[in-house]
Amino acid sequence: MASGSFIPRFALGGRISLAKIDAAVSARLGPTRGLGQSQPSCFNRHVSMYLAKHVGRWSTTVIGRLYNGRDHSTVCYGIQRIEALRESDPDVDALLSALKRELGEAANPPVPAATTENRPPAVRLRREDLEDLADLIAARVCAYFERNACECEDTPHAQRP
Image 1 (spheres, rainbow, N blue to C red):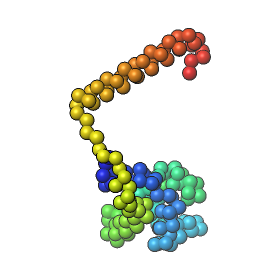
Image 2: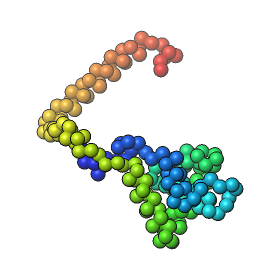
Image 3: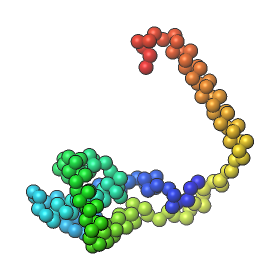
Image 4: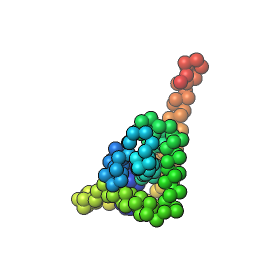
């Protein structure tokens, strides 16, 4: 089994919810859903969109739905704007790093030691054993396809799936 550092975040308990990302940004910067296109809420919303894409791994379409049905291209623009600001402004870079760290800690609670102690011991197979296992699997797959091919020959073409 892989060590905890190589296990993807989504395998440890799912991705971070959009609501949690939005709440973290709102708590740090202010509301992300202001009336119209007021500058503070627009920047906050773009930060939230950037984090939703890069930390939460959400699609731009899903992110846009959260923010009053905005189009995915609007979300892409917001993400690109924050990426440009991050490269040019060290304060924005520090803000994003702090928010990522905050969201990462919330998404990855420490794994209790009891779960690692109950793990079965790792089994190491020799190359010959692996080749034998591969041959067995190939034989079963071939048998499966041969069995299903016979069933398909009895079925007229119009009824095949």
